[in-house]
Image (cartoon, rainbow, N blue to C red; front, top):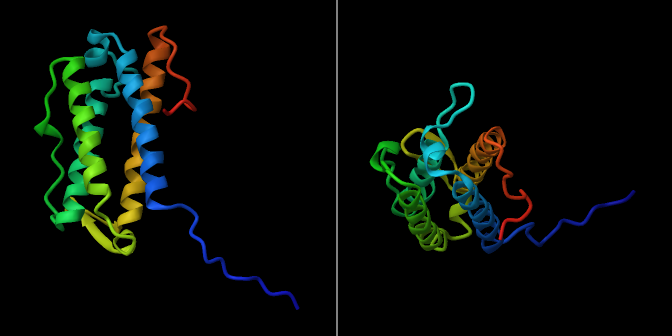
Length: 163
């Protein structure tokens, strides 16, 4: 009979997870930069929201969610709190939220990643699942951005170049 040893090493460290997430954020930032100003706020395909709205959603999730996790605050999600008027507004806020994400992510202990947390008072999952959702949601919306850029005749950044 063959037995399998139990692995004692974890698959990924929290630092590696943050680096992975920030790689996606770097790429999404480059997608925002690729848009002409007008099209960033007005262009859509098939009734989807313009990319400025999608970027606003991403800005309104990551930092505020991590702050809520750390402070154990289940305040409702608020996408309407940020209403940018220019691409520069979006990029500035994106960079500010990157620092907020770094600040709060680094306060999550290994044990907390496994704790269930009712994010925004409506998404009750372990913290690590909420973080994976933030990344998945960003990838999904960035894919919409790629579709918009291609429809505008603009070559999007290579998806594998995250840094």
